[in-house]
Length: 198
Image 1 (cartoon, helix red, strand yellow):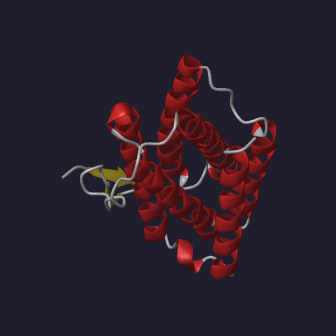
Image 2: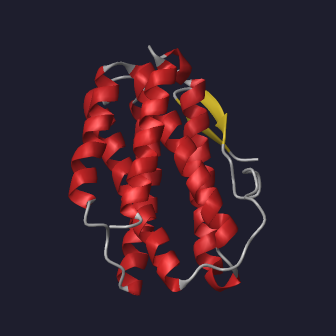
C-alpha cells in the first residue's frame, strides 16, 4: 500500500479501491444533471485552491507548509481536469466564481490566522462535505460516464486523504471546533447548492 510522508509523519492514502464505497447506483443522470455536476465540481475545486493558497500565504514559513503545498497540488490537478472537461463539453462555469474567488481566499486566510489547528479544522469540514458530494455522484453516474466516474473516485480518495491528514494534525483541538466545523460545513453545502443552479 502506498504511503506519503508529510513533515516526517506517515499517512495512509485512500485510493478508489480502499475508499468507502458509494451507495448502490440508480438510473443514470440526464445530460443537464451531468452539466450541473461538472459546474459545481469545478466551483468546489476552484474554492479549494483559493483556500489552500491563502493558508500557504499565512503559514508558508511554518512546518505545515509542505503538507499544505501537497494538498494544494492535488486541488490544482482536480481543477485542471474540470477546467478541461468544461471546455470540451461547452459547459459554462458558475457565474458565482468571482464570489468563490474572494470567499475561498478569505476562509483560508481567516482560519490560518486563527492558528494551525483551525486551518486544519477548515480542511476537515470542507473535505467531509466534498466526500459526501462525490459519493453521491459516484452513485449516480452510469457506464456512459465511466471515465468521469473513475476520476471522481480518484478525487474523492484524495479528499479523504486530506481530511485524515488534518485530523492527524489535531484539527479537533481548534478552539470552538464543533462550532467552526458546523459553520464551514453549512457554508460549503450552500456553495454547492448555489453553484449547481447558477
